[in-house]
Image (cartoon, rainbow, N blue to C red; front, side):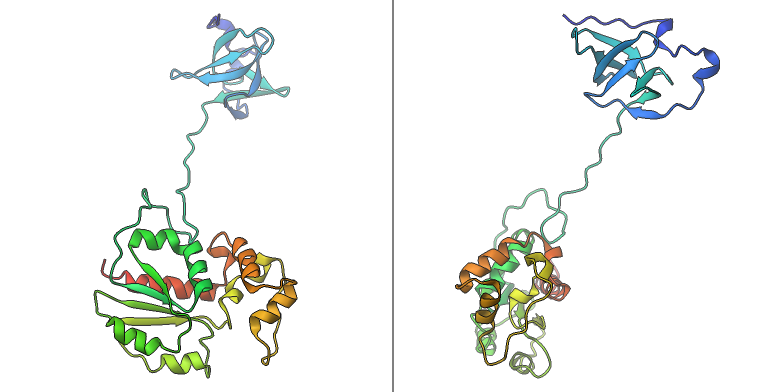
Length: 274
């Protein structure tokens, strides 16, 4: 049975009044911390700190509990005189999504809006989902794959974007002189925003260090890019290699900034005015 004994004069330091005001090192009285009460020689582990500023110690040998005032210099820890203080209240940082956004209190998907984001293929969609999926579900934004952008003008015309049904389009290899850049110049709707990356394939938008290489290898133009990458990694099937690469991605920090900026620009565009 636990016994409490609030020692009177012996609950303070043994050095006298002139030492009471000395600046002893402070030590948070966290549960499980083992200290010695200097005046009574009672050694025990912190059980809890009471509301009145006293601390309860429990002897490991006998199980006896005693309560002491946390006055300056009243305790010793590892042979050093200390002043026990109440543990600081932990202020946890808000939880964040993989994209770095503050996690909402509820991540339940909203009813899908008319606005949407289009991406070139399955791998683009899976990467966007892994990093921005929580954000998009909260916003009610659907990501759809195009399986290439050759028919992009026709797709946009069929969807008939408006101010309340905007389209964001993510394009690979959007560099001067590319087929993609020439196609994009034919689209001028104010309700469509097209962004892209300079990479041949979305695989390259994963930072090389994320997948354990110094840099993505250069593949000859007369070879299929993914075939060359698979040979480099020693994996025969592109789908199998993609699963390995995607598995290494945990947050936006694992991606190149060009992709992060492109996707976040589209999210801002399709959610504008909400």
